Image (tube, rainbow, N blue to C red; front, top):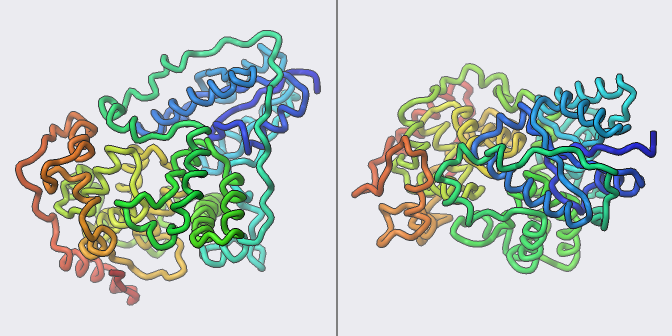
Length: 475
């Protein structure tokens, strides 16, 4: 069946270069039909992620047209769509790049089994990660539960070089019908927030490659020392593009390796952050419960609160804690949040407000354009104390001292909090146009009082944890 069309089931791999699945398809000599399926799993994405995915699909469709191909859009359960499309085309193969969260693996396993039962070649490819999670093992053959040990294992492992973008893809004799992307209304839940966030986005493979080049051309030199300062342009901003596969991790790895060998001071630390993403997927594969249950079972008895009025004010960027509120408002205005700020808002919610980490996890899932199932789950559990860590003590970040250390001139806080800026800038004002209409927010006359005194919140959290006898705080 090597002369029959090949269906490429596109998911989070919206790029032409560094795409092993696409490179193999181009070399096969077969007619290639790329298809994206809006299936129930994809329909369930949060508002920001679903909207951003739609923008990425539009950019990838244009890129495919540039090499003589098309992106076919279909809606429905993945197996039904693929079986129907296979019958229409007389296709003999369906290929896709692997995903690693439990719902995706269950779906893909069903699809592979059913297609092979029908006599169709069904093949999954690597592509989303540097290393397949099951290939990284401890000396005892298990999986890593501590990042530092994981990093020591992978930092010298060979990483394949990125494949070049194909110059052309062989088209089928007749293209199948396709849905219209606009008809899917993937940004409907964003409502008016889309117009606020849109100028901050960097959509598509070309933008991603430019971001990498610009970062390696300068900011990487000071990355280790300045990456925690949210008012500075010291990070790559590539999390958005990695999420949708608009840039491949091998491209980032090898370009950064070159900089490291040329003496770039911050290059190795940036590689460690890329490996941190790998570690998140390593854990997701080996302990899939990390997305929904405490990774450490002993935390099941911790007296976190469920959703509550304090958590609602946290959500609205009205906690009265400037660093926390600036971070939350940054998320509504830009669709992302600085990594240092993510740690602070997560610690504040779970420690000072004693609220279950899953409340925050679900909210980030709805609001982040760079939402990632592995990184989001591990990040929240790391901050809460219930997840994997080399130093498993109860951290309590103090947002006030963190602000003094990492936002000493209050530039970040003033950028996003209108009540503290005179006059407020566009991003501070944009917050009130981005949030849900139901919140009925307008620029208040004064900044709200603190929900909880920091010393009291810290003491309460440590007392709740003291039965374990290992409480500690981190300034």
